[in-house]
Length: 532
Image 1 (cartoon, one colour):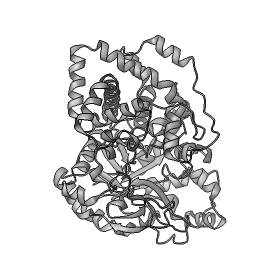
Image 2: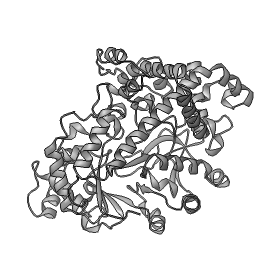
Image 3: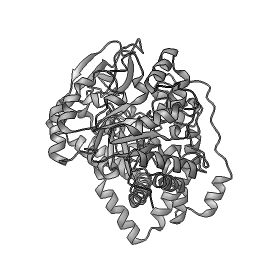
Image 4: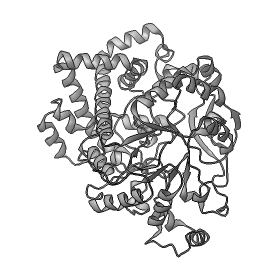
């Protein structure tokens, strides 16, 4: 699928500099696109754009919707440019700096976490994301109200077209969000029975009662998509393509499960029978209990995988390529009884990957995806990836173990149709990884490169090998091209709300950094000459 040698950088939108507490789709996103262009890069990889759940530490991989956009990423500057906010509004916002929120005690359940956030009593890790949201939300609601009150007929017609095109997910998501606020109960399974069971008359009544709030929620989604499409168009003009990311599972407390309960393995009370995770291994005695509800793949297959077709079509409208997180789950998944507190008890269950892939390719002909095929049991996915030509991932940091000669993550074992990474958002930065490396691993590094590897040269050498590899696409986290240490890590799995907070400083991406990266990109055949 990857047709020519190219490269790109990994940086999530929230990590961009911003005056408003969290990176967004405003001026700094355009400046980063300019930097990519100047550095000869072809791709900008981001993390999921869906709304984040405060109860899950604001992780972009845990969302109340598989389709909606994260309204926290809406640029206030661009809203002011369109007169949905005033300059006075922005000035008042900027006069109140966003402060980090201090945590005293973690919640014992997801219900407690979400309830605490909705009542503005924070129980998560120190977080600028939560503080930014509490501060930014009133201005976003004000802008939506202004739009509904003052939009011209042409603007209103464009909004109505958006609502029509996105109705298959937007109506349920807007009602779901409005009901969370109206009931004061964030978890849908605790709502009144007739709403939980989606009685048509009850839903119609609630839709009418909550009409104004529903419209505001839809307008924010309209703002988000407009701003995203404007950024994508700007990037395309500079030959920059976006790589998106979707987790295979959705969380139980989501509009998706509430609106489509038959697509998941739920009991008569609409509670999960089983949850997703990973079994115990060398690194984890009890395994990983993620808690997502398991798909009822028989029902998905009976419906022709319609929900998945909608989801992938939506992704393809947003990005040039999409990374499918935990691709193994399409072939085989670890199914844990919902009443088990850990992942120690469970079993491997087959998923209909052949039928799924056949249905997707029959629908789309070309499927622009990257499979996250890391971890155990990758052999279960390889025949299907080879058959459909789907590129997988290779992470150089993973290659320097005792199996160095045969590891698929070592550069000498790469094939062309893979995406080579120096590291990912779940890894430490390369410099931080080196700081944590054992003496044995450091010896492997010295032996492989043929000279002593130190703090001063490790990042440069890992990035060079990633770019020099035969892989047609090479991706490096921005932290690596800036030679940043472990304090700049984006995510530490299992650390909850202490992750996802890293921000780029406005003056870090200099002309010198762009020139150095451009030189490496040209030298390794990943761009034709200098960018004009």
